[in-house]
Picture 1 (cartoon, rainbow, N blue to C red):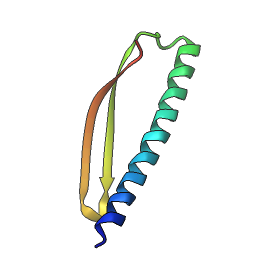
Picture 2 (picture 1 turned 120 degrees about the horizontal axis):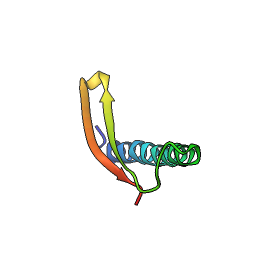
Picture 3 (picture 1 turned 30 degrees about the vertical axis):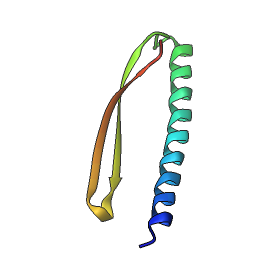
Picture 4 (picture 1 turned 45 degrees about the vertical axis):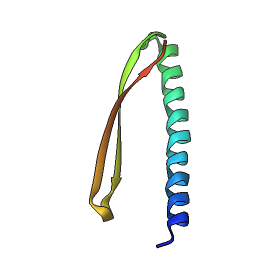
Length: 68
């Protein structure tokens, strides 16, 4: 196994997930605020699950996204 290549691949994957997730969350929040179904000072519980079936890995991360 090439450690450097492995680490770069993990970082690239996580960067893609982070950028895409942020964009999707921002769009969903803007839409919900525009529709009046969300206040601009809300706290949103959030869950992210990382799954790699070939490794039998499934890890859940819980957190909160604050709008204010």
